[in-house]
Length: 108
Length: 114
Image (cartoon, rainbow over all chains, first blue to last red; front, side, top):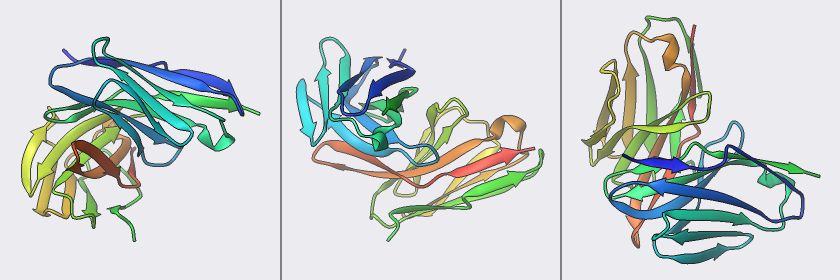
């Protein structure tokens, strides 16, 4: 079967660092993507990892370990505008499967 | 310019009615999708079309019928609407670039069935 697990909610303080974990089980794995969705908005692409290691894009970084079927999204210097839901997604050879999303709450 | 657009943005209707949602993308992508996001935010793929050809049909009830008149458009028609169809429906398009398949989502259509 296939599954993706990520925490349903995470809370962090403005200016801090937060890590959102994602574990997956699937066949035909190509890579792991991350998407951000603000309330009332559409999901938007953040990052993609096909190979093991860390990919950095500004304040956001994403990590993948294929051997552990595990990845995470790291958000640094948190800002209030980062309050949103974050989805990990498995890119397979036939389609993309999304996790259930992690709601990130940021406290001032 | 809007990359992926959907109409309408909101749709409120009675059970048993038939309704359509339209989607257009101006990105020149070959592949388009319909996703359903329920009240718990679970985002699930329903259909995928590549160059007007259906390539994914994820065990969606046959009351849902997608139609792609050309590769820039993918419409969704829903017959005999049920309460459980209430959700946000997102259209998306994608193209594989340097091995990365990035989904570009439309703004969503919030369907409420009464």
